[in-house]
Amino acid sequence: MWETLLSRQSQFWAALWQHTQLTVAAVVIAGVIAIPLAIWSERHRRYAEWLLQATGILQTLPSLAVLGLLIPLVGIGWPAALIALIIYALLPIFQNTYLGLTGVDKGVVDAAYALGLPRKKVLRKVQIPLAMPSIIAGIRTATVLIIGTATLAALIGAGGLGDFILLGIDRNNTDLILIGALASAIMAILAGALINWITKLKVKKWLIGLLAILFIGGSVVPMLPQKSTTQTITIAGKLGSEPEILINMYADLIKSVEPNSKIILKPNFGKTSFLFNALKSKKIDIYPEFTGTITATLSEPVVTLPVGANAQTTYHAALKVAQKQQLTLTKPMKFNDTYAIAVTQKAASKYHLKTIGDLTQLPNAKAGMTAEFLDRADGMPGVEKQYRLNIPTVSLDPDLRYQAIKQGQVNVVDAYSTDSQLVQYRLKVLTDNQHFFPIYQGAALMRQDFAQKNPKITQVLNRLAGKISNEDMQNMNYAVNVKHQSAATVAKKYLKTHNILK
Image 1 (cartoon, rainbow, N blue to C red):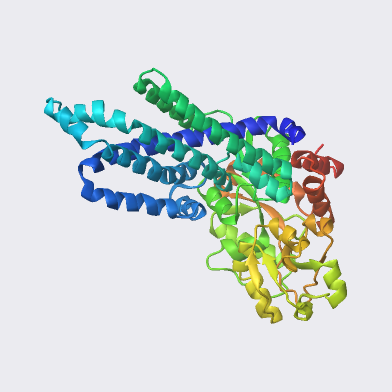
Image 2 (tube, rainbow, N blue to C red; image 1 turned 60 degrees about the vertical axis):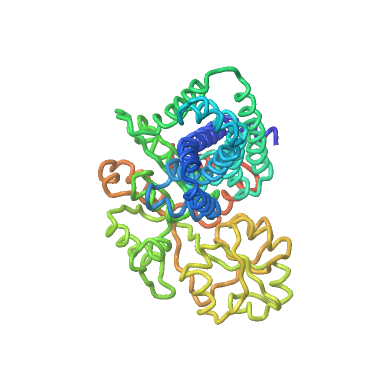
């Protein structure tokens, strides 16, 4: 783990800084909202219960659902993550502030009024100082809660220590998971201790508030649009080693024709819908997509291709979908990363499983599959209809489904035909003899305005057309996932070995 941390120290410090920015900003903004609201509620107690219920309901909302609801409104990245974290920080700060204020001895408050002190002075000189331990406890609880929840920000491209956890799960790398998890835990402990230490310092409270505001300002300003003579190109990829390899190839090729451009890579950016929305809203400029995904998921209405449609038919259908949405799709690569159904070699041999239809011969069949595959028309619902199957299924993370079949918790999984885990776990891919699964060839997807502005980029990315076989991609995925080589190194090696990049 120490070696892994040293090799990724620049990435670690960047993730830690992003995590700190999100946490401080969320807690401070939540405090600015919740504390005045609690002070008002202390004077209008008939509304306090309603506010407590409202903030409580907000905290019970699943974090992934909150992020999903925010994406159409504010887009992907830092804003959505920040709003979600503020929502989760409201309850502990509001509740503790309110309870602290209402818990102040009534006799003390009455004595202050008896001395002729006005309402504002009683609040500032008596109630708030006596309620301060409770208020600080609420801020500390919110901070620890936010540090843990902020790891989910990585799912929508907002960065943070969650990047290490997601990458570790995807690569089956315990070291990366531990780095992200332990760093979050240590950060939470230190944050709690820091809050306690600050409250004991004999400094003006307004100075602490000013420093917090300056910190937030310093975090937000660099994220605002800035004029620059250098073009910035943001290339994002879905979760997994394959998209990361491809975006590094794109970066190397673009750099060869646009050496002065600044290229930002966002690997493990999220699911298909996240990337597509980010592309349309100009949060990113390019991402690798698949022809079958464009026709089945990104078109409105969904394009229904005939069963067994070849690669050329699928590409032309995807091209039309892209053009209708003012997008440009480069020519496809050779590999067909289509869906597959896999079982263990042992089960295939014992029950004579060769095709997907043979799964009717598998006793006590139980499938572990990704949520996307279970929900797609060209996924499990279509497979069951085409092959007349009825198999109990559970939804699993893409990498965890391989762990589940290895441990015998499931005996059928969905897969991609280029997955390195098929070799790593010695799985048997069942033949799709009825040609149900459509063609999924990779190609670069970008906006038309970006492509028209940068014709050299479209041209250089088309150098990958017809390149990279299924075996090539599987070997590259294996090098990244199992041998733990960097995606950048693997990508550049392929480009140079095949004379695509000099």
